[in-house]
Length: 368
Image (tube, rainbow, N blue to C red; front, side, top):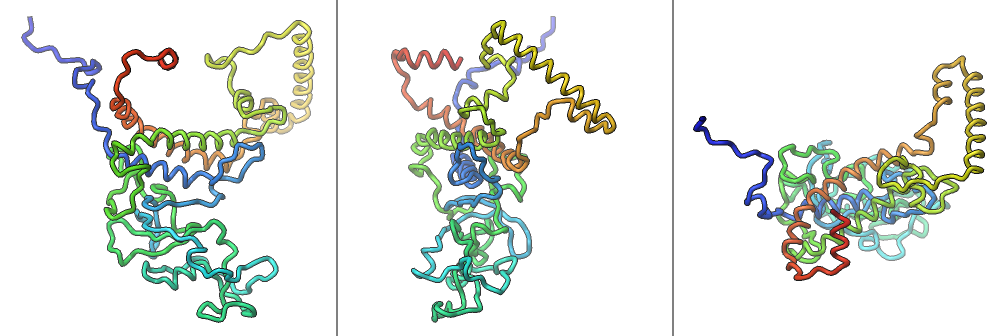
């Protein structure tokens, strides 16, 4: 008989496994939700009219948000939004604005110059463009300038490069090509503790991003409503990515029409009557004859014949919509992964009910 001690199977749970571990900081989850709202359109509509690609919609940024920023030597670095100003906060009331009736003749530079954090005049010029005709324009130090016609919904962001001195802080327009959502231009460490991207150097003086309170134990109580808000917005974008169907009356019907009926959670279709079955067989026979005729007519070109002979499953899909949807789903999944321990910690902080109600018991049974 061997005297060697039998090793415990790794898949068996122990008493230590039942102890809820520390969920860690809530900041990666908050930053993940901030990035989601930046990538999402301001009003995620579920209307039947397909909106433009997410890459073409104006983006909103938030104080304390992490982002990628390209410096003046074309290097992408980690950065933090320190402050935000709107055009009406910077420009005087009634300042001339460009319109279709009066166009400037000077070409706009491809990139705005770097504007330091203390350069208030340079910050204001980020919203202006030069004009030749100075008639009826301001006669002060801004004479010869008018407000850009692209200022609608734009923000002026005070950016701090993480790990760098404050003298490199600068003002950047929110629609600038030099800023991108966090970790879309910089690398995410494979050894990071969180699924959501985290910076290598944290700006300690960054503005707070909490939902309700700086204490994570208190702020965790507001996490569920924010997750619902994010999921609802992403669901609208997913529905808009489906091909439009003229005969479908609602979004649920549109989604179900693209699901295979053999899946166990999809209700079985209503059995057809004998008359409906005969009509359906006639339609299929007519479709088969048309399809065979079409394939014979196009037999000279093999690729065309194969394409016509089978159903085009990508018909109606939008390439740009799907390309912008993929990173959005990635960020949502990462945020939900990091939020799961906090939801478990929130559940552990709720006192256990003596006798659960019938409604809650029914919900637990359905979830199991």
